Length: 482
Image (cartoon, rainbow, N blue to C red):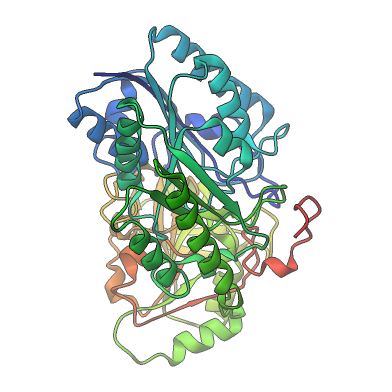
């Protein structure tokens, strides 16, 4: 039985976003737990689709003693503040020191964290952890599918595994795989590391593993695991980070060095071969609503308001789609718009009351707020348990919520920003997603895990927002040379 310290510190950093992640962003719960320390970590992640939950369950089956240190996550945004990064690291360091003898370390990380003072947040954290525990203690970690995997991360870790789906329906599975890799290390096996960075960026919308080209890449990845003991992964990269190591990569870990290198090269070649196919069609708001109004098929016509997706660093409050839907007098439901002042006003007014609001648009991105007189259709406390494959088991704390009606338009408002990727968010306010003619969801890909089977059609709109979909429109200055 080994004594294993475990900690989680996750943030996906969009360096083009103006919203910084301070300490409070990590301390307060949203769809995922707020900052927890010590034994409280177990309850906070239990039953959730999170890597830590999967690791804990598998490590307990293996009979190990787990030493919970800390778990913290903040919604994607701009850079993590120096204060937040250093404070949370200090808490992790103290927890590891207080744990006594440690035989191994598991870290639940994202892989695309950028702090005010650090371009490679995870690489620095791993270097500090390595100095803390010494060269002989195995360090194993999980990373997000969108990780920008740096040489420092690979050098400092003994083994790494990533989510293999986008939407991320296998986060807990990735944690379980990390526990199995760690067991091999604890049993005395030495794992060779094979690592390749690719010299181009892949737009987020092209990374969906439910469609080509990534569906084929993931089949190739699965095939690589047949008949050998190599654990391999593909990192699609998070292209909204203007950093030296931004971009896709492949990783492989195995006892047989030549076999491990061969798997990594096969996946590298497969990714490069598909380079011409990493693209997705985007529509203007006017085009999107026109197509939605013309739709006569079964199921809701879903418009992904991808550039305002909080899951990619968007503010979650842009109003451009609201204005277009009102202009076209469309019967539609929009979720989720982050506007805590509007939610508070609706709660003060009560269900059935009318309330005049300036809704959304407070971030200053895109159109101004939509000023109108709304009817309060429903209210909620924002305490929701995820039921879909992505947010399964997550205990969300989205603050006061409201369903507001303006003629044929329903707007679901939350007090904390969160991408609309689970039907439970809509049902919390009495909305049956399957009965809506048009659904506008502030999400990019994750919503497909729970809404995809309902949809009559799905398109992505290029309305204003900080989660830029067409990365050719971004101005990078720090990428490494191709």
